[in-house]
Picture 1 (cartoon, rainbow, N blue to C red):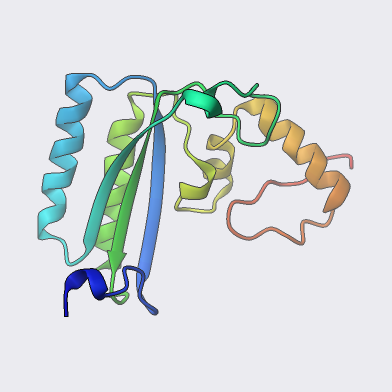
Picture 2 (cartoon, one colour):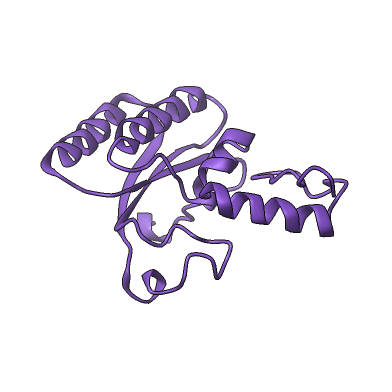
Length: 161
């Protein structure tokens, strides 16, 4: 069977995604990215690093027009770690976080909300500029004041409802 006939995302696999928006992609960033990729070689995991160029039509939308407001950085990196079972997953996620943290220095410390990896409050806040996060917290307070929908990348309802 050809490997392209096998499913990429198999049931029972452990998967981790994390990201960082980049303001620039100088040679030093490329070197950092390549070194991170080389460090993944010894892991019992499938590790991927992606660089996505942003801009175009998405970059022309006003940042205040939608919840997705990271429209000015020209690049986003996505660090992916996947193991077929929980074995080796901790080392793979550690690798992905380290790659993200090293690359985040080439941006403002923000990340793509769907690739935050960890659903903690700090990562959820890092996915939005402060004014956008506060606007979303007010919306959450109006529609979900008891924070029923609090899993994954949670936005806490604004205080004072």
